[in-house]
Length: 191
Image 1 (cartoon, rainbow, N blue to C red):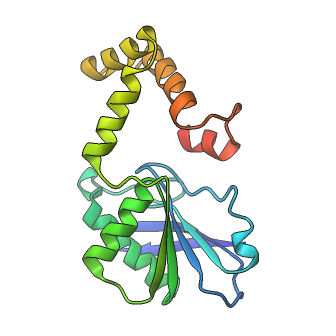
Image 2 (tube, one colour):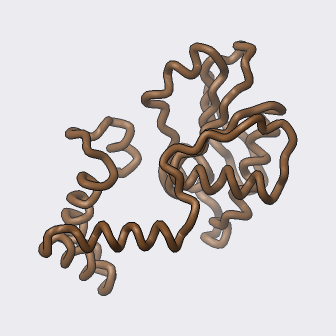
């Protein structure tokens, strides 16, 4: 595994590369969030046959934080993805997105119409904010009254204290990851 930093006009972007030197078309993994970090758990078999690259989007994981919150937009993340591809010399590539990373991959393809993208792999795709919000509202409505009430109160009042955090963990345990305990990488992403 090789890791390093990519210099961009908006800050340094951390990346990791596995399986470098292998000849098959590489995969560039786009993590979820926004706000999560790259997680390689469960993808080990991929870099036994081809290069696999991970990076933490600006504002996430080991990458720099943007100078202003105004940076955090789909348009800027599209430019960032193009910068990462260029810096890593990924002329031919598969894009593998997780959740928000799926939306980023699709937006990048639609806006940039880049050459060399051989295909996309969408894992637990987030593709529509209205659909995502409706799904979350439906799932929260099905939670026990005490949990549902703590979430709704936190969202209405902006008080994200202990009751809200405990309710959200109960929600995540039911709708994000059913494993107990959570894998270390997921615990790290949520910390």
